[in-house]
Image 1: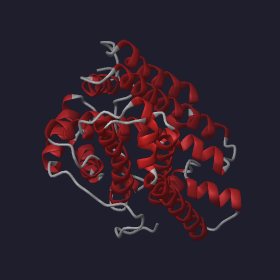
Image 2: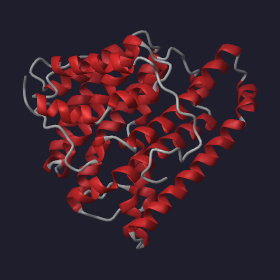
Image 3: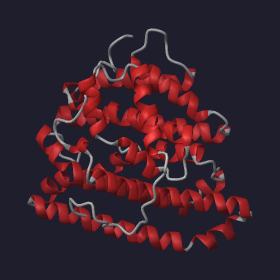
Length: 329
């Protein structure tokens, strides 16, 4: 996996045709939610080109569905990048912010005096859960909680400065990369329902875990310059440098090798799914939903790699300035 737009992992790249319409709707939503304060910040945000990521990650989504996908992605990235500031080394302040956001999942609304990002998340959660089963809503809420609270762990790591092992880092990265809520959202906006017993089966859980790790590794390869410049230890390439004493080119090669081994494992597991369908006694409609779930994982892996190779987000100074987390409306 190199810094190139050429394919490196063996997954087909697909793309929704409604990308431009979603981009226009998303900028309007961001303005309504007061997440980005001025034109200069909006220009920096648009340089991230998250509309491309949404169109590639959710290639079967159209219209308002794709817009919802992009709105969710915009919140993910805007939220995450605020921890590149001193806030990211303050576990107490980070925990207070994250508790406010997870409170939305219980109350299904934001308090009137909450910060703009909290109101934005409440809007997204209400839109996302509409029409979804109770099982899906519980699962998605758990994944959101894990995502938000993983930032507290990262803040504590930055504060203490203790070294991260590769295994510990990869475990944390499964939450911080944010793919689990995004895959949940794919069911909502691409209109399929993964059978819960299939979702809980070991084979599908393994595929989901591999997809999450592959997205995290790719992001780390492309963002290593940003994290290194910020002195942030949360990057697999930097962890490999420190843990194994590797120079940067060798650490990049080691991360790429790990990604290709995980991609091969993903392909092998996916090839055996017909037998899993039979074991779980999935009917034809359930088999189709399970196959679409696995395709959504392939789409995310391919989309992330294609987008990350070009996005301005991975420049060290690309984050828009926000007043969205702590300020009151």
